[in-house]
Amino acid sequence: QVQLVESGGGSVQAGGSLRLSCATFGYSYSWYYMAWFRQAPGKEREGVAVLYPGGVSTYFADSVKGRFTISQDNAKNTLYLQMNSLKPEDTAMYYCAASTRGGWVNLARALSPDSYDFWGQGTQVTVSS
Image (cartoon, rainbow, N blue to C red; front, side):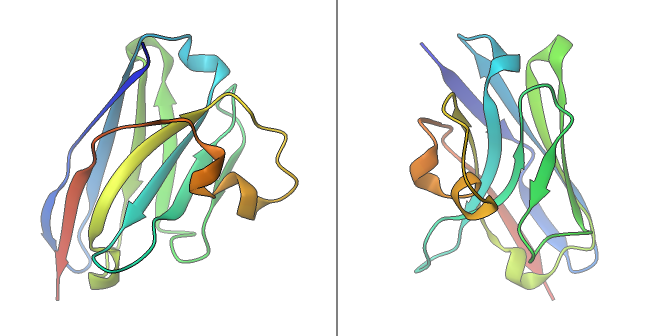
């Protein structure tokens, strides 16, 4: 049974940093495409960052490029999202997700919620101005 458990959310002032963690259980972590998504109240869930198997290739939404990084620790079976220079518009519930499918034709598909099969419960990030 695949399980994803996020942690690390909280409240921070604009310009601050947070690191989110996603502990993974029940599968061979390194063979999955891993991603972070976020959803603000009243808005659709949007892809933020994706990490391809092997941990080398990473891609980011334009809204977070240059501020967020995605990484993994294979020994701990944990995915991370380092968020720097946070803005109030980054306020959302953040989710990690996993997929075995891959082969997406473009970044939009790689960051689409429909491309992912397994989800965590989410961790809240609130950025105040």
